Amino acid sequence: MGFIGNKPSAVPLTGSDITDGTITAADILDGTITVAKMSATGTASASTFLRGDNTWGNPITYMSATGGTTITTDGNFKVHTFNSSGTFTPTVGTADNSDQVDYLVIAGGASGGGCSGGSISGGGGAGGYRNSYNSETSGGGGASETALTVTSTGYTVTVGAGGSGGSATNSVGISGSNSVFSTITSTGGGGGGASGVNALAGGSGGGAGFLSSSIGAGTANQGYAGGSGVNVGPAYGAGGGGGAGAVGVDGISTKGGNGGAGVSSSITSSAVTRAGGGGSGAENTAVGTGGAGGGGAGANNGAATAGTVNTGSGGGASGGPSGTYAGANGGSGVVIIRYQFQA
Image 1: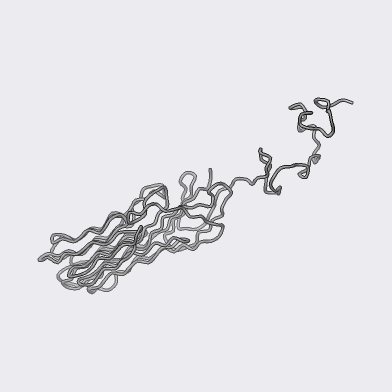
Image 2: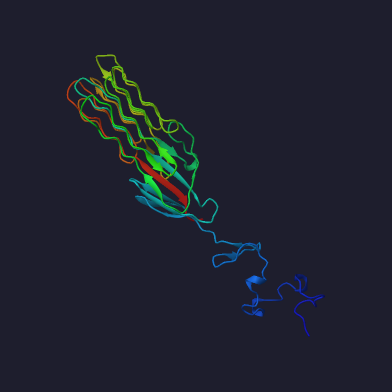
């Protein structure tokens, strides 16, 4: 009889008995070689395939997910932005790091302090700022955090509200609420102080009022403290609220303290600055401006400006020789989640 390739020297055949290219797919009947005849490692199933290294492998897939106010695409990445509380539900893939997500979690900013005739209040502190994206810094000068490992389950996302303006009296501002994603919690901003009333600590602290009011401290790796007030007349200024990127500015006899600057992030693809502190109120002098990133400006005998929504910025404070005014609202926070969805 004839032979395919070289004449075998022994039975059974080995690879050396068959010349390369001699046996083609047309020479093998369907079903002749079964999975049971293969010595590949791993588990053969309807969802696996035989790899070139003789191993049964899974197809490469990437994460997909639902949830958020908006979902945008940046190259091979999806970005889920939560402007209000909701649920992030990922389905993890098989590719390397397909269970990893980056995040930016910003808490609600605080309101500035309120005033009654002759009192001057400090600006509201920005909400705590925590960031893991692309080695960008977190608030308070903190280093970039580590990406989160997730599983295929729903994660509650809480977006902190900004502190309300409170009452139109000589009163401390209302602190913002925390924002939460999985194990990451950012602390709400601290309310601005009033005349003789201490500011509150928070993600970033509230600015002090004048007349023996203490500043509010910031939270480590989330934000900075508020600024101090000045007690030297005849013009008076309170302290600006702390921002994620800078301490609130101290008030001086010629100007109220500006809010501390926020921090810029490109997690959504474009650079956006968020979490600025609120500006202070003043009497007989210039008011404090809001910190970069959405901080609200202070006021002199008038209504202060609120922190920008979904930036976690502090609200401006009021002051003046007459009238009663509430501090302005702090801006609500935001949670942003980013992951790779394709190669």
